[in-house]
Amino acid sequence: MEIAFDLSSIFTDNIQRLEKADLLKYSPKRYWAVAKSIDTLGEMSSKFHGWKRIITMYEKIIDHDEDQSVYILWDKVDG
Image (cartoon, rainbow, N blue to C red; front, side):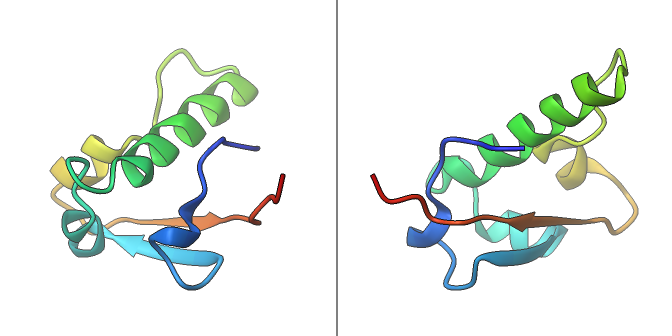
């Protein structure tokens, strides 16, 4: 799945494991691309699987009582 955000200005490694505490540091007010990337990937995943509801969303991870992690892997596209 591809998204149109370059996360290299936020993260040094092209793979990130983000937990609730990490996501709270990357608040959408300042790091909007992180939340938007998670929401976009969650929406794309739900469509792919044919689900009626989006399961993975930034706010759901933040608001959930149990610890959850989301993994993001990306390649920087020059162009």
